[in-house]
Image: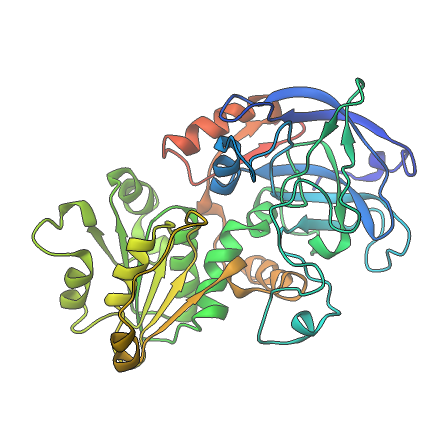
Length: 395
């Protein structure tokens, strides 16, 4: 575990540090010196130890129009240490080990207090380039230029300022390069199986899309005791990553279907035949409305549940037959952050990792130094990695 004592000398003062700045859509990030302001009320400043790259970072990095926004400091999966705290911060202190999480959890509103929702009503999730409470940035440079935030986190910086509603304290025993995985993708997939679907022992699960979130769903389904876990993808490289390189047994996946090879019948029909009537649970992890419909079609009538995790275009629409929805008695639901409550559920996942139940090591396929962050982008875009961990200090 990295020492944290050296990070606490700048409380109340701006910090100059390095950040990877996205200046134009789709262009390589630029390592620059930035100025990180002290935290305001209800905020903390974090020293980022390591961060990892998620497809959401790439999606927003490519967008030329809003919610694309430049110059911007991307990144939202990370592990860090609290460097300093602003006024009215009681739950965190200097030196705490934390993961920043894009989904707010104020623990005070009716939704955060309810077991039925993880959608904070006091701080609704928005793709804003600024912080929650006063719509301002904590990043600038020597020229006075304002740099925009990303999903309230901006972890592609040695230091960042985050609202306390987006910070979860965790056990410092977990290694930083495993803790950062629980900041978004792995928690989303595992949570979708565990919390949203509540997968039952002995059940059959189908996962559409075998990226890191889809494989995290498989890990969650394995932990829940699913008997059959069928993975569906069009990319043969995903099969190699999930099965040949790591072995399907480690991820819990028992069977594969290459949907590209299904030329005579839709993939939903193939799954219905494989499962003798449909799967108990289907998870859409790509972000395509057409795939959501295929998933819904091949979940079993009477009790089948389809969970949507993939992020589609904002104007994408589903085309479902109303009579079929009534007659089939299936369930279709979304699962933002897997349905997890960040401040209470993520520490449980940390404990399950430390107890050697939750397997995280297999998700990290690459690790690079901060100055090589663009290599992480290349690896993910080319489909060669699941999660690439980016270390702020040299490996």
